Length: 200
Image (tube, rainbow, N blue to C red; front, top):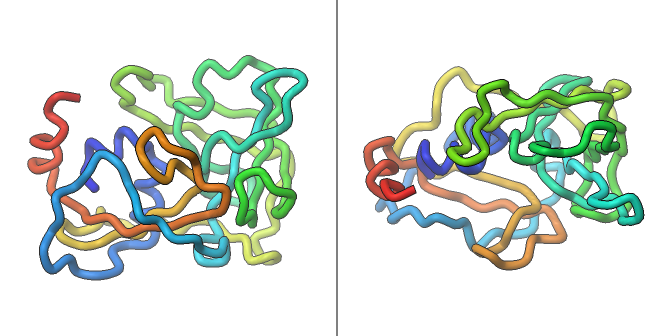
C-alpha cells in the first residue's frame, strides 16, 4: 500500500489505515500489487465505523451499494468524491451502518440530506478524492455497536501491515464481495510507490 494507491482508493482507506494502524511487522516486504486479493469475510463488529452508501442508478432500480464510507461523527460520513461525482442533484442516497452485506436488509438505514465534494477534486488524476455526507438524522453511537472512526495523528509506518476492509472487488475487474471482507496490505514508501505507479 502506498501513497499513490491511497490517492486512487480515496481517503476512506487512508482513514481506515490511520484508525486501525499497523497490525504486524512485515518481515519481508512483498512487492505491492495494483489490486487487493485474498480478503476474508469479517463481521461488521470488527469495523463498526464502516457504512454502505446506496442509491438508485435509475428511477425503477433498487437501492444498490455503490461505495463504502466511514462514520466521522454522529451526523457526518466521509467517502471518496468518485462515489458521488456526477450524481444528479436530488438523488436520494442512503447510508447503511452496522451492515454485513452490501445490498441486504441488515443494518441501520439513514437518509443523507446533502453532500459536498472537495472543490479541487479531479476525476482523471483522482486528486483530492474526498467527499463529506451529512445525514438526515444523527446516528446513535452508543447502540448497535456503531461508532465513529478514530483518527491517528500520524501515518502508518513503512514496512508494517495494515488492515483494510470493505465490500469492494475481490479481484481486479472481478465481482464485488456480497459480505464485508478485510485484508492486510503492506505499507511502502512514497519513493517505492512512485516507482511502481510511474506510468499512471
